[in-house]
Length: 602
Image (cartoon, rainbow, N blue to C red; front, side):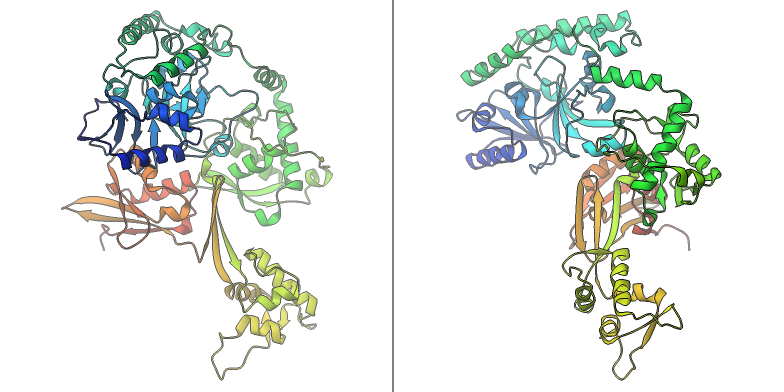
């Protein structure tokens, strides 16, 4: 974000009211900040200036030009502390610990933080949501070197096998924002340089044998060290006893000796177990976990199911505790080939979804000899996801789920009351069908001479047709079983539930589809408009940035006139690839995407 020099478009002194508003925003955004921390970050008697950048970013600086906070969208919802602020109050943000100084080279070079570069202790990955502000530190040093926002939640990261981008870096040590300070500094000569630019040979012992560092890199690191030391000697800060005291407290906590970095015992155990399993053992373990999932977690109503969802949500949780299950260690090598082999054996029926490029499991043969001879184990299902590297067919599209649910209306309330069901709850289609058929069975309404016909009594007839039949017309006295459930569900109030990761929302009415439209502007230029993404728990701003990188074109976000929500405008006619990207990357069902190409020739 701050790769180029920071040139303010406008700058002004912060008024007293705006100063209080800034403090409230920081307190809400960073709950770890105490009142004393706020006084350190925003000293009461020090002037605060705010400068507006050409890209709408607001930078809040102390008197003397020391940047402390920056606001990405100018609304206070995405405000971040600078490294200067984090050096004063290191506990302001939770922090990811890097595996070693070698990883920090890339972070302070402007690269985003990937999950393989994070040091995860024996307690596992901490819990976090997508879009949360986090800092980055190196082992043995509490001074953060970068700050950014998480790209996915911890649950999504575990399902993705701890692969991919963890933190989108917004600001880091030695970038243009850091250099914009009047006298950029580090807390002292040995505070950051010994850790950030350490000897790469001190990197974790698990990768020492595989890491070769050239002499050119060593020379570059030495040059950067001496440069950092020169910068550190020219400290130009406003006279403030609170600043000096906070820096002294941090200095006392600094330990830069990384020579004792070792692989944790848990990592060693996983490696030894993984090596000890032969290909035949992994194949047998795969079959065992699949059958265990068929018995315990997968019901026929869950089918069809995507292969990636079957693997992450059902097969992996059924593995024995402490066991590593890697599809690439088996004879099949890929998830799709393994499922196809099970289909050829007759255990399941499957087909390949050419659009999603993955195998869909359509049905389970519960009369298969392997299924009938298997005895499921009573075990505690592990809630913690396994760190695996999925193949190309395994993506995060299964993380999103759309469920159509229904609430009993005044028409069908007597049916629910008769069978003892709660009229205040929400029901799926299958659950609502079970309710009405339970009433039919209770009242013995099936026609004796024709089991496919249901005879309507007064309560069921009113529930299905009262108010829907024109006056003077005769009410039906019977209905076919296949028409009973759809007619009953149509008399209920439609709702929908959208779930993405840990976030879920229930709204009244049917789910409105996402709209993609391409039109021409200024001659032969095409633009593609996308709207309705908020209904699927997708924020417009991050999506626009993502599409800008994906399609290598400019994007913009505008509010829909007279409506709630935003519209993402993408330069170019990308209507087909955009729809495919939303299906594959975000898991949007095809039926919830409306496509309109106004540029197509009639």
